[in-house]
Length: 542
Image (cartoon, rainbow, N blue to C red; front, side, top):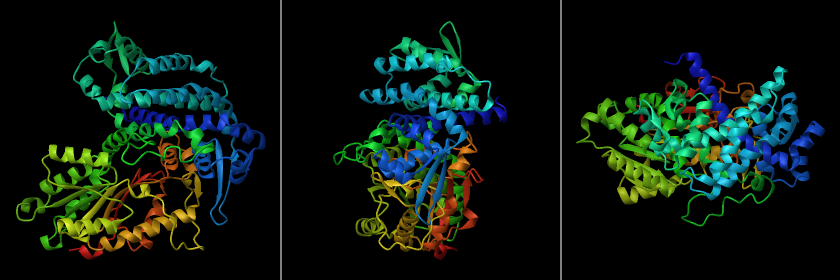
């Protein structure tokens, strides 16, 4: 049984691994172009000047520099009133930037592995991985310094490298179900689970080096530490799913900003492994269901005439959230006792066809009836018309729910921005490489939520949303937040995560005030990167 301090330490390792998956390709791309050396020489520079000197795409360069700020290597100086941004090298950055060449091997591995099957361990990329593992065991040739500050930075960089080795590995094993097989065995051998046992054994030996397994005579057994990580494989899923984006950072920042946006209609997305993303997202949602259940139980314990006629999950992903909500209603509410007379109208909507297929299959398997339809979060009017014309139900008669979606709307320049608005956000935002000011991001969120407001007056919007935090706050709490990875994955893929307080303030301005009885944030501190809110819905109260 792991102690609380042990769990906290292992959880910190997961966060630092996620930091590495994002930071290594960012730092190496900036190193190769000379940006890091320039900053070391100058001490600080404006984003505008760096963009001009290095012929960069300003939006993605800003995302990259803010990622390094969240690791404590730069300080972001942001003035939303004048829309000016400067970055200054910290003392930590002066020690870290010369170590950026150490990322070469893992960044090469990310790029090289693109040629191979995304769900298999194959010999050619494994040969590259083997060299990385060997170097890692020797600390990449670093003599860990007696100076505490420098040694801390060296260990930070090594943990980043470890993250790129561990993250994709644990996700591939988790998605294949191999960890479930391991749990059923007191011990196992490599040949029981892989067609290339020699290579797989080397991977297991490396994980044993990290303390995940005990190995004896080529037989492996999980340690408590290893089980902790294996049981949390899903925590790596979303960040690892964006490796297609991290492979192309040099192109996105310094070349064609549309490099990952030219996929033919109907073909898989280029910037993300959507199947992996849905898998990772689904495993993360369970952490937030308890607070969600309070809202669902309250709504569906009301008199029947004051209840929603059903649920609409916009951005249904793999259907896990819709299934959970249905089961809570069925088993824990008065409505669940009346489903024969008052059946629930369940709708799963998504922009992504792959997600719709997964949701449909999962709900059929769970024997849950639902309509699975295409929908665009930016066009609630089209969704409302579809429901009315094809299914005879009004959107405002449903409880709208969604998870981690509003920040992923397609960018539209605000139609009537307020020139006097000065944002409170510290975020870095872009669209196709163009930098979007934080003031405009707030205006965009306001217009987006106002589109939904007419359909949410009765029962509201139950929303789980992702957020950013200030980079200096992230840098001061390394190992306690996934903010660096979230900012990178979402910043380079044109998504718009704002701070919790900014999101709630804009929702209220849009006529959708959060109901504080049903609000929560995770963690419940200034480091919150996830919130739950019931927005609007005052008319439906009974």
